Image 1 (cartoon, helix red, strand yellow):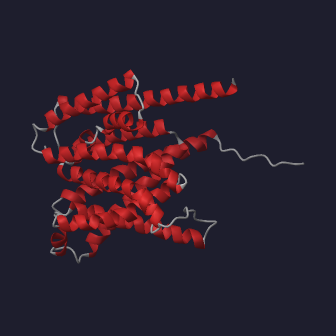
Image 2 (tube, helix red, strand yellow):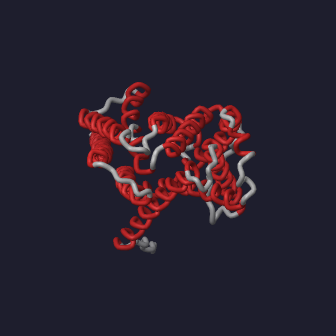
Image 3 (cartoon, one colour):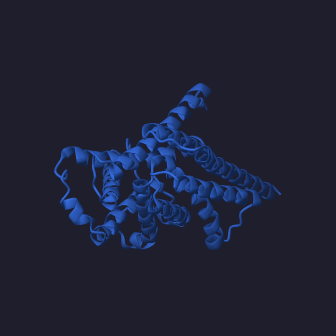
Length: 336
């Protein structure tokens, strides 16, 4: 019986496709950071309500997911979105603990970005890898190799040097740095518990994102009242201006888009390449930020960034190599 030949993509087209995906990730990721920084701490908006801005981004992301879920039913051949109901009692019970961590993570990230400069933002949140190693051992009993631990030591040294050098500048914020550390801790716990929670949604990342954003919209509401942001928002001078709501919408759209291009970059490359790409992006983002905000940094400040970036990239590379070795050993044992 005749079988049609499979259509193969030429290497050149594949490289162009990968390049476009990586470029999209860089642009959207940096755009999201700079837009959030503008919303959170610029004189243009001057709205002292960071949790409200974060809540608005969750509302936009949840709205986009809800729209896609409905359109996928109307146009199943054109749009795919996994089936799921965020109002299901069992789903709420299983996913709510993760959503609390998600809320803590995104709120502390934005609070860190509000108080620290974009150039220092990456260093301020650089301890995620260190917390990953600690919690993987405490919660999952997973041991880490000596060379990966040395990378963590280098990251801590780079972070410490960065904080020391940043404290000599006018832009230093202790509370912003603390929020960065808490954000790193929350991201680490979120990453670990995500693996457990994906079981409840059939490994559907988008469905988990949908639930997290819906639940976070509700979780944020009492926080807005407790922190006193509701009166601040209601008395905001630009509350009735269309451009203000458009800016919030764009910010929420960027938050949704970064999740999509992150998953897409991992799909067309690999987790290791994604980590390296993110590290390189952070380096470029730091350089761009110093130019945009006309910041002059010392040699030691730049050295701290280099140490953190290099150590993070080496950790990702070592971890990937170790995973490949374990996979090859498992394959060999199965053959035997």
